[in-house]
Image (tube, rainbow over all chains, first blue to last red):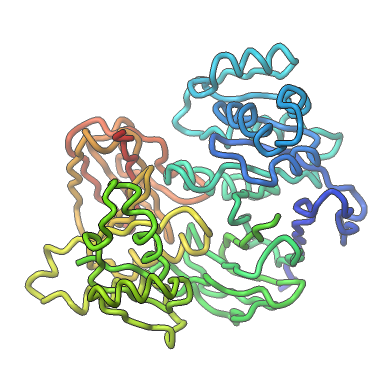
Length: 268
Length: 208
């Protein structure tokens, strides 16, 4: 049986802007990585300005626009709030518009933000709609190295969180990373063998591997304190949680889609 | 019975009096403080110990989470004839580090014969084991209307509900395809029957 293709992962986008991101590895070296940011309706994590600046496309899901309007000036206290708001202007606000404040919507609309008014749709969440928008309107000519960074996807209402994790499974060919102040999570599809490059200055050491949708009868890892070795994992039994990253590269192979999670360091 | 899992004791010590405007910490003494004791502040541990809390130091056992230890402890201390009527209410299990949250949700599956409810300010979650037909009585003054049902851990080939705005009728659910999020409770009673263990969640109303 041929070996699985390798997918590499890196959180270099979390590195402070004074240090350049690590040189792209493997396939990334051919095509430069680009980022899009989606902001959902929860308090902005502390690194929101950094990621926003790195991104080429920024989309707010409905009330996420309130969070950017109110929260960006708070995260940049040394600067004039009005200037911050102009600089951190979303490219689009998408959703049914029942959470975004009218004055916030008008403010951004007058600055040129695209307002996409979708009626509520029980089959797709706000995040789903934003991901669809980004894949239909990619920031560059090439989507192959686009990473979508999502803020505000974890915590809050649990059904929203589950809907957001389901988006990772539904768009398994798209690189989507859910970020909170505490954690970063993304999908490791079973179709690939994974190399996760750890940026120790901003993430770790706590990590985990979770088979959210279906049990795994065999997962194997390297680079963790408690590695899996053809180990089975399922809800009701063993999950890899409170594990510790020990090496700069963690490898994972599994017969099931897994969610990888790693803690984010407080000074990020 | 009130149990604090390790640093949960710090939370009671610091926050209960703020929330109740009651400066008397003696009214909120846990019967047990349990866990590996790497988060509880020494002065908090001393205070509760002096007030009669049993300090159950399980630091030698690194295989299980603090919540797991607490649930084991509760099960162990509950007489058999009371087990069927026992409901364990857990605060602080959601949000924060995602791997902790997943481990806490796993506790619902590991102890699937116990009623355990995980609560946050925003919502509650509870396991609906596949072994039973479920009737969920909705207290609409405190919960709802947003709800959801999720096949975490394994897909469902057939789930049927009543009482929701978008009911399921012998429906398939799995991650990667359809799961029931942003549903709405449409009745005083919701029923659920499935071939898979499901997680039920309902939003909690802001009571301020």
